Amino acid sequence: MTGVDPQSWHHGLVARWWSLFRTTGPEIEYFKKFVEAGQPALDVACGTGRLLVPYVRAGLDVDGCDASPDMVALCAQAAQAVGGSPTLSCQAMHELDLPRRYNTIIVCGGLGLGSTRDQDEQALRRLYEHLEPGGRLVLDNEVPYSNAKHWNRWPVGQRGHLPERTRPPDSRRLGPDGDEYALEPRLLDLDPLRQQEAWEISAYRWRDGELIAQERYQLTSNLYFSAELVMML
Ligand SMILES: C[S@@+](CC[C@H](N)C(=O)[O-])C[C@H]1O[C@@H](n2cnc3c(N)ncnc32)[C@H](O)[C@@H]1O
Image (tube, rainbow, N blue to C red; front, top):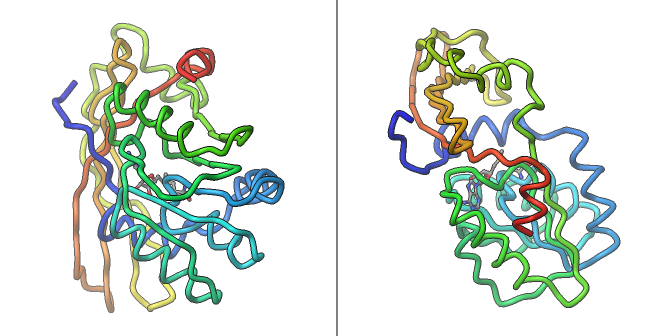
């Protein structure tokens, strides 16, 4: 590996991108069924509230937590905009320590980000301890072979091109504030033995055609096969 320490990139302009542009997706309805059936619920790694805010708007009893203060702050704003004020905490899931217990805990796209594998095991313990007896953990997992391009890099000899080169931003998106935004990720390394990827992202913001902010972050992602995750659970 390139020596990237466990970290996540959900800060600053990346957090802003999530709040402006990552607000939809089939996961919202998928997880909602579980939340409706078992309240109170906790959305772990809630981000800017893509799932949590529609649930709060629907009157469901859902708390949220996330490791990134920027994501949590934007989530609080989005909840407020729909007339809600859910209890939100800023905690990494392996250190989860909340006063409430839940009938449902959901984690969507959060396990393995910016953590060590030991921390992921610890996170599963902490999630279990935050469930009411008989409560349910609903956790998604993107298996390593879900993306053919990424999976093709696992065999020996297929990673000579890493780290990928830095590219200029591909396309811009117009925000509701009139500014334009772009994100450009690149894969730094994949270690099949450790089942870990290291990524870097460049984030850009333009106003009236002029670049007014540019930030760069890194993200590590631990990869799990389903049977492995079941054994950990
Ligand atoms: C891919 S986003 C998903 C956000 C949200 N669940 C959704 O589906 O829209 C991942 C989120 O996980 C958070 N995160 C990363 N590592 C975490 C950790 N160790 N504990 C808690 N949250 C973490 C990030 O800050 C980010 O908000």
